[in-house]
Length: 322
Image 1 (cartoon, rainbow, N blue to C red):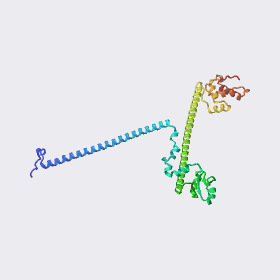
Image 2: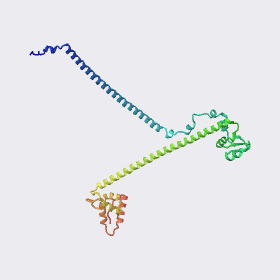
Image 3: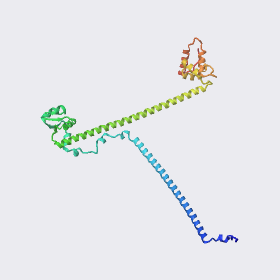
Image 4: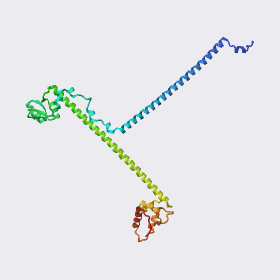
């Protein structure tokens, strides 16, 4: 059987054309894969940079907006300090003067001249309508002119709406324009009244807010003062007790001195009264109770307690003289 010839080392080092083509394809595929990985990595890095830029831009925008808000708040605070709060209240005149319309241009010079004269506003009517004009619509008979007239604009509007009475010197169109003028003035008057009511409401609300703030400030100040006074009293009481060798009182001892009528300030000030005897090993309350127990039977305990309280109130040192 013939032997299979062994591969030559030179043949491995010098591949044939087919092997070389396969090797070139393999190397090209590796190079392409490497380029793809680099391109993907570059795209990922670019995306991360874009995200970071967007985040930085968002942070910068938020900081800028916060800066603008602080500037606005400072300007508002400065304006409030300079200008009184009433300046923010809408004025009735600003509400009523709607664009500064010229009544003469809108309703006619004759109409404005008619309603601008002093009442009564004269007009013409039929004789048979006199009772309705007087009793129902409120017209007044002007004897000197021998005409029915309106004593005020309210009656004037009622007479115009009734169509039983015509303003002197105005035709049908003038009546319509006059009624429209009265309605416009009524709307303006109503708007003015509403604006004034709103102005008063805002002023009252502002006054109430200021009063509430003042009351709250006073309440907080009183609370702080009371807390400071309580703390000071507690520190003073603690200092008086610490000056002695007295023990803290028992609840029954506190109840007993209270029942006798001994004031709390008397108990504290008794720490400096040597005539009540030694205070080692007992409380200040027990020391006072011991003093009351040692009194002679002929001594009234109520009088003794009142004497202790009086010395404490007057700031005098108590001396046992019973």
